[in-house]
Image 1 (cartoon, rainbow, N blue to C red):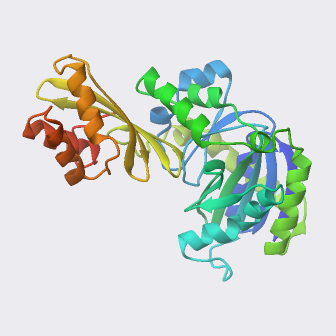
Image 2 (cartoon, helix red, strand yellow; image 1 turned 30 degrees about the vertical axis):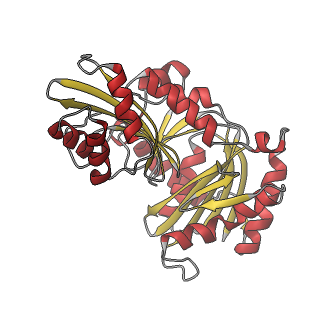
Length: 348
């Protein structure tokens, strides 16, 4: 397998290089860091729905839409990227999704453990230390290759990340910031000191060498030519703004065990805003407000209390709504249908 230890590259190169290698069917491991910040969206995402384009323009932060799935990420020089390109017919690569991630991420887990950190894989693809995510990863198929991309957070700017996402309310933004700070960690935070990037890269190189046969090389003319061919597409407005998947509610994934959602629900003239935090498909935090003020605040608090800790499925939520004695049976059913994703009433 080709090994590219590229160190600092431009923000655009930090994404387009592995795309070029995949389109050329060249198996490779790339280690790199972007010199300047940017926002990267997953292949299936709808960028205008996910990104605050005005904020990005004000901050001077460019956008990239990758051919690999996953969520929106803010990337900068305080992260180390590892990108693995493998032919999809490679017999050594597991077909099973969970085993695929486990095999390819084991060198990264070991790298973190080399710093005496209790790193582990939280299925399917988060690397965590003491239940906090330090490495987010995603995979997909590009041409005839399977590609895994991920990073190690050396440090992270939570405030900028919370500023460049599109949110339905400022309260949602503040909740997102709070949940990131509670559920993410960095190498600097865990070590209690700044860690030398070269030290981390060297450990990654050693551990990946133990898993794959690596041959160090540099970008050749074939790769540079493929980058030149791909650049117009990745920079085009058509590619960046192509319609993606849109939900009937706003959802942001913080980590594998933490999602934030906000619904707008109309119930017989009562317009409710429901903002909740999910962990393992259970509601761990919930705020319900009534813009028309038809339901007294104390009754809304009772409804919140009834739903807190409940699993996101219709029967459980419907029963909880009824037990609160705040909504009539029709309203309770409608709210349960919306929160469980079975009703088109909720909208972002």
